[in-house]
Length: 310
Ligand code: CP
Ligand code: NVA
Image 1 (cartoon, rainbow, N blue to C red):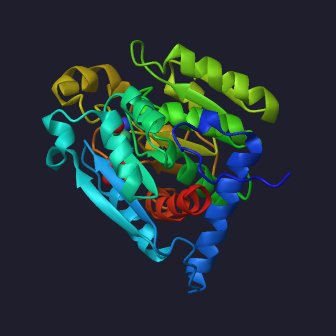
Image 2: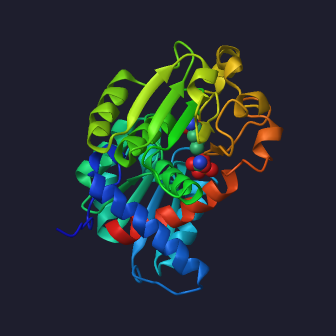
């Protein structure tokens, strides 16, 4: 049966079947080709997306805003501090009111529960633009980038080095849906959540993917086609920065670590990067670095999410 995602929320990649996630990926590649060919495609003419941001953003905000414009619709940036939400209006009431005006709601926030609450009360699709737990719009653009660079996904080895955070969690779910062999190396105390690992491993059975956990970054990158890292202190963890930098200092992606991966391996990072911490300038600016193609693909991937769900 044809896949129909109209009206669905995009909260976690775990919520989608392998076929549904494939549809999102195929649409992302298609919309990129259309854009490169200069073709106009405006399936969302007259539609609006509300975007609530409780945390800063460069890529997510701008790519959704521009993407919505390219699809013929309009995005509204709503800084949380300027909404009545900050003065005590509930998430449920906000969701119901926004649903009377707009055709979709994106939210970037701290507690994951806020996104699921919003989705419970909204009658339009809700898109998770990052929580402390997950970053699923990022992971769609990431597997799209890997597919472009590697020519496929099944059997590709992805090594994630560093903090087992929101980005790592969504990458595990995306890898599981796509048959990617993912190896994570995180220091003790910074492992991904056991419940997310368990769910991703469950998903992995269907596609032949695997999720393996290591302490030693060199062990994790052996045979890797992709080496991925993220910041040591995520948004909201600024006060823990010194402690985290100490715990994660052996997990820097530098030339030595990259040379332990496959020849031709690419380097990825969701950005923003803290150069000199989790990654060196040398790696960020090397020929192996795919970070700016990855950032560009946020635009195409987000357009796919909106075109299929809204
Ligand atoms: N990677 C990412 O989500 O970037 P922003 O925080 O700039 O949106
Ligand atoms: N883990 C990072 C990702 C930023 C896009 C954070 O949550 O701040």
